Length: 161
Image (tube, rainbow, N blue to C red; front, side, top):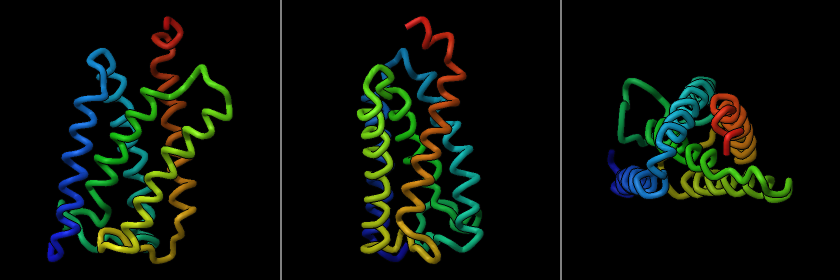
């Protein structure tokens, strides 16, 4: 990796997300967080490879698996799934529809915002035939799919609460 900025950003993402997972995933919810994490990895593997192989997005500077995979291991397989764990664990089930809408907006918007900044100022991601709103939409949809799966898988546990 030629540019130290990209390396620092990726390493910081790993450190920060690891710290957040250790601090904000309660011990009694590790199983739920792990399921959300692994399920999101499946979704991002499919969508991530699709957009990279169709030449819609490229990741010119990557820290891991440069020759094995064209997608960003850090984002697709760690940061985004970790955020999904938080999304599902802290989803506001008993709040209003407007609050839930804002929750989706916050989670999808923050990631999209970081992606746009990364696209503009770093060599971590480059949009080729892609726009920021496609990222926002796909993140929103994958969060929704993940939440549906989470609810289905833990339906008995969620009813008991």
